[in-house]
Image (cartoon, rainbow, N blue to C red; front, side):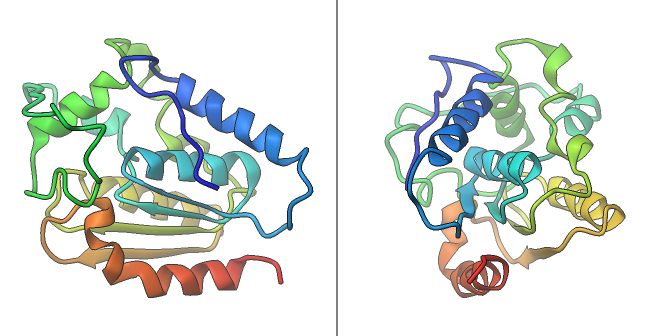
Length: 199
């Protein structure tokens, strides 16, 4: 299934997570196989980790927006800059934001999720809620893309602390973001899902 969730400016945090909770509740009412996992990239990568935390299902996160409160607190001097996002919601994610490190855009991208509400940063950062019941995670990131590598490192550390299985593929060279490197990690992603889905 390919679910949608509300995005800005229609809605802000925590609306996307509420939509994912609605999805999970609906899935439980359907006559579906028990093999359920979630795959997401960029903002969807954040959603997939959130579902692993909330439900225990296996999750794949490609360039997930995972470092929120810590990154924003350490980048107060960065000026948020939107840039050209005229086709942001209509262009394939493999074609957008592929140019590399861009703190100004990342800050705009993340803070736009909260509509100016700084008090929500910590609650929206997944690493604080990883627990002994979090589902297995597959985490990938490019080394020089606009999403910082710090997020996957923090999640990996938390998963290690709670002794939860994860695979970390943060060694992808270059500046590609999310689905921009999907071909590079597709086989490993399928092996991860095969290993963690019930037969």
